[in-house]
Structure formats: structure tokens, C-alpha cells
Image 1 (tube, rainbow, N blue to C red):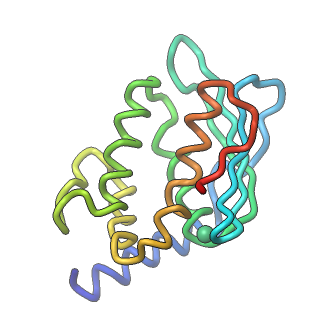
Image 2 (cartoon, protein in one colour):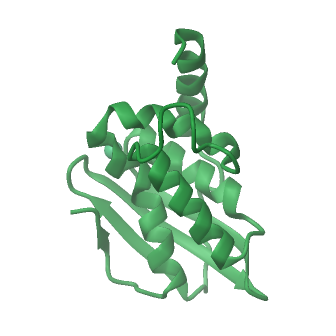
Length: 151
Ligand code: ZN
């Protein structure tokens, strides 16, 4: 990856890490779950409101590193309005991207801004930071209130 591009990617992640979007609680939703990444100490709670099979609203609260916070922030921006199947498909692609299951520079189509997380491939220890919110989202959709752990 070119250095300029890498800097741009880092900027986007830092921006969302510092000024997370949809950082709020949604009250009275049965779709909420907590997640914990013991490796880094990241904690997140994800809230989802489903309406007619679509994610009408999604938000999070948490305390974590810049990568986990940015990932949660960008996840909420990306998934609003999507169906559960679309959200699952997006998570699948995102997971393949950050775990390096696709060749460098590939596997980003359909991911939009989430493509900035391609750089995580080079830091396997950060994969759990980047995917924590997504695993927690899945638990929230399935109404599994017990804490999700990445370990
Ligand atoms: Zn972390």
C-alpha cells in the first residue's frame, strides 16, 4: 500500500475513533448485547432497532481503543437501513478483509468506507479490536444478552 493511502486510512480511523458516530444508548430495545475483547480491554454495547426486517437504528456505547471505537462507529453508519441478511453479508466481507482472507487490495467492493480497515491485515492482534462490534451486533440481532468475548 502506498504511504499516502495508508495515511488517509489512518486519518479516517482516527477521526471515527475521536468523534464516534451513533455513540448513544437506545432505550427499550430487546436487541442489545455487550462485547468484550480481553486481549486489548475493549468493551462495547450495541443497540439495534429492527423494523420490517431492516435495521431502522443502530448505536453503540463503549470504552475501547481507536480501532475498536472507529470500527463500531463506521459499522453503525454502514448498517442503518440494511436488512439482517445484508448486514451478515457485510460482516462476512469485512471479516475476510481484516483477517487477510483476500489478496491485498482486493475484497473491498461493497464495503464503502469500511475498506479503510484493510490495513488491519498487517496487525493480527488488532483483528479482534476491529471485529468486536460486529460480533456484538450479531448477538444483539439474535437477542443474546450475555457478554460476547472475542476469546
Ligand atoms: Zn482494541
